[in-house]
Length: 303
Image 1 (tube, rainbow, N blue to C red):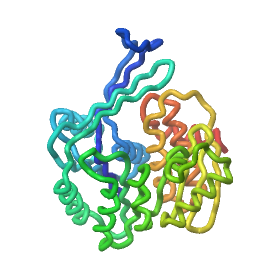
Image 2: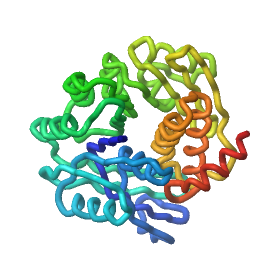
Image 3: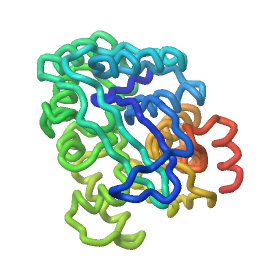
Image 4: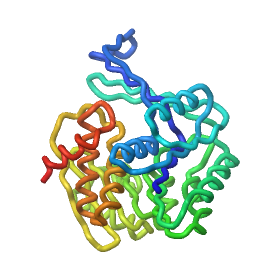
């Protein structure tokens, strides 16, 4: 079974504005409302690929109720915990450039996290996958993810996957997650780099993350593709497919879903990375998360 955890799910309000002008009244030319949050995106992408998944996380207030209703309508299995406050609303503005305004999120407490851990302990079985991704509410600290992994150590052979930034990610490495997927800018932030290095430099940073505990590391590089170092001492690079960027939201989450889907089916790191990169590209080329057919088409362009 594949479980995802989203600490900070959201309602994402997408608006398109022609020639956005700061300080003036602007009119939208299109708008739509969708559920957001990295773990939810991973679950939705996995469901589209045919994998069984259960989405966990925290919801609050009327926005949390709306998130739950929308997730149910999408046919996604979920078991959210209700907490205090309001789930966040994120505004995604598409104009001459992409501008995101992300809300703060619900008031998740340590007691709420304890409830989540107890639920996970009751669900997780040998060989399951647990994907923890995205930001956390301001009420929690950077040790939140690592503390969860510490308390789940008694559940053997769980494949932990982490997609986070900064210390929220690096503090988990001592628990040897199966996979981490920083993007190249998050990688630079971790190591205090002022500029993006060349491919060999990115490989070197990925190996440093491996030496810190991660079993497998993917560094996503947007339109430049992705690199990976594996626990079997393989180093690989896959170019992204070329296409028109429509929406970058969810591309990294689609990569994780694509990788896990293909790795479960084939056990092959390179084919999993290739499919993951196709999934990320396909998502970037469409307004929503990509369909399985769209991903397979993009993958065919990469061969």
